[in-house]
Image 1 (spheres, one colour):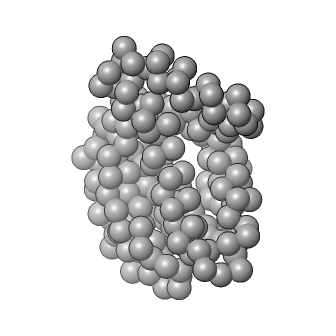
Image 2: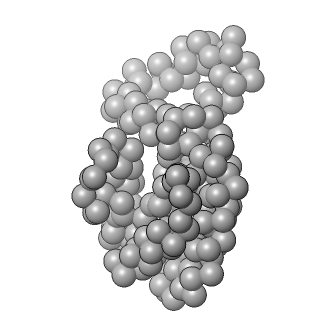
Length: 198
């Protein structure tokens, strides 16, 4: 997926050759690859592939690498992918549970930042505190490129909440609206006891 994105961006004339030489043969060898690849492409349209999915896979693989949870990694990966797909396609007024996932190995939640008509950072810090109440140990704060200044103010405000530790501030290839660019932040709950390396 990342190779295809790099080729499409920097060498678009090679995209078809790459797909014919690498992706198609892999699908012919294992037809389940097509379904998984399609789902990864779907979440990539809103920046969740590199913004969340890869980070969560890396995180759970570190936690479960040398213990009994290792046998559950494949199930966790599939469930994370399905959760992110459902979250990406949520309707306004969606159930509160869609905003986070508690898995066997780890948990994460989302806050999407959009600058309201009357900017109110407190609304976002309240949401961050609600994720704490749900025992969510990793929090993704995702915002749009054109609202970058406001998003950074929200991130700074959340970083002042005692239980949260800002571990990463990163650029998104696409934001949650599907527009180019965006900004993301990953917080971990400092008292969670999980491996906090990001």
